[in-house]
Amino acid sequence: MYKLTIAVLTYNRAKYLKEMLDSILQQTYKDFYVIIYDNCSEDNTPEIVKPYLSDERFTYYRHNVSIGGENGNYALKNCNTEYLLITHDDDIMLPDMIKREIDILDTYNDISLVWTNINHIDVNSKITKTSISSPSLNNQDCIIKSKEYIKTLSSKGNLINCPTVMLRMNVIGSHNFYFHTEIGGVCDCFLWLEINQLNYNFYYINMPLYNYRIHNLQDSHNTLKLFPLLRKPVYNLLIENKYPSYIIREWLKKVENDTLDEIYKNKNMNKAFLTIKNNILFQDKKDLFFLAKVYFLLPSKRFYDFTKYIIKKSLSLKIL
Image (cartoon, rainbow, N blue to C red; front, side):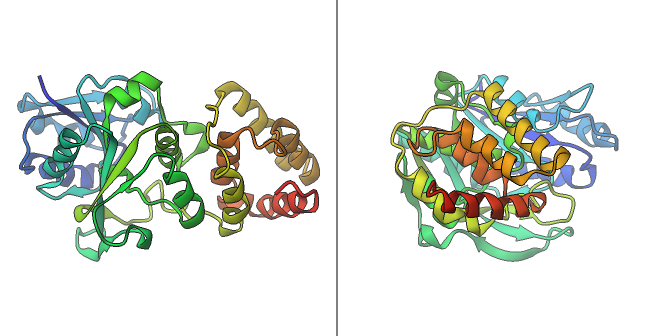
């Protein structure tokens, strides 16, 4: 009976959650259903949520055990509306955000997702930076054409503000898209990459319609600092793939586990590199998404040494 589901993912953020839920109620667009997915919080989250459940549009679902990043996939799997917005528990929506995004998806059938510019706020909800957007977006509304997102992602970093993204669910369902949580904190960027590699465009609204809270406990505090040494060599490989394959989850896990074993258990950088090299046809440039996973995985701080090693070794073998 509703056009949009708003999924609020929460875990131990009771002190911020009320502001997010209030901002949803203050939206100028009202035809939505809200599901609060609680990842087994240990604080007073249930008490914060309880008053909102008197509104028939609000539902509360609490997992019995923590499922980590799979909470987002749970929201994807259980969405029965035309559109879906998966948002954060510690941020604030500005009143016209939902209406502006709905208008775009209703108007343009070839747009698979829409997102907006943001402001940064501190722990006290005070705006610290306004209009946070990538310079490559030229400070104006724009469309990211099919297969274009990967180029900007690789060369200039992520453009898309995850908690503002509204998805067209028939695109997600028809291709069985989901968050590859094995990638870690940037699995949202990876999903956008997968969608855009097919014939789907993205739409960016330049007006800042969301206040994104910056604090030390947020999950993405460090994971989005992509290591710049990887950008150029991986970019050169990524842009040449016109028809990439999808990730084979179990195969990918095996390669990752073998690689991590060599790095941490055996302390052997060369064998770790060979594990990746022997499982990817670098020379034929056939597996875009494994390369993208390497790009996303290695920038975390604990992988800096291996990041440098794999680039140096690849260059010496003329692989990159």
